[in-house]
Image (tube, rainbow, N blue to C red; front, side, top):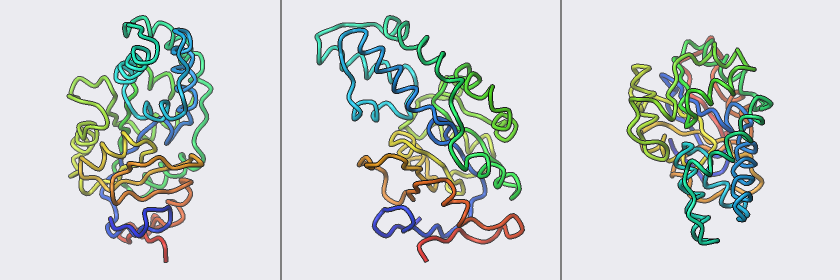
Length: 246
């Protein structure tokens, strides 16, 4: 995928996808602020305030990977040695209470339905555990119906989580499509790096006012999922390429 300046709307995707892979948190459901609130409250319980920059570092990562990062900050900032269990005992009740209220990201349902109408195989590739994903999806049966193929953060076939390529390699494998023929939709640095390392074409939803540095070269950045829908071929023309910036 070529890029001109790396900004939303500047990229031309030359090849249409044979399949699509979708992150969940922050891409389909607006859960990232809720996760951030829970991690912030957990750290605050131990006397440490997490900055927005640190919360951004947690996005897209598995629960235990996030816990390891927060434990490191507690040790560095306050000299505290806290176990995963103690940290999660504070964080998990908060996040479980918040997540059922998560709303869909604008354009998410239309994007998934467009993939279905094009006949494209699709899978969810999430760092959430199967139980956490079920909690988030339960108020949104359309998500469960449109993405029955899933890779979870605690998947027994997964050797490493995002930003390693394993989650997207496994997602492509389960769809029976080579990774380099897949479009991967992400919103986090960890997720974008994972998808790019797997060989996918990466489209990143960047909803923050300030874009974080470090996205892999060639990622297409969009501010709204509707940007992808506006440029994608209609269901009657599945062979056309997505064109932007023209």
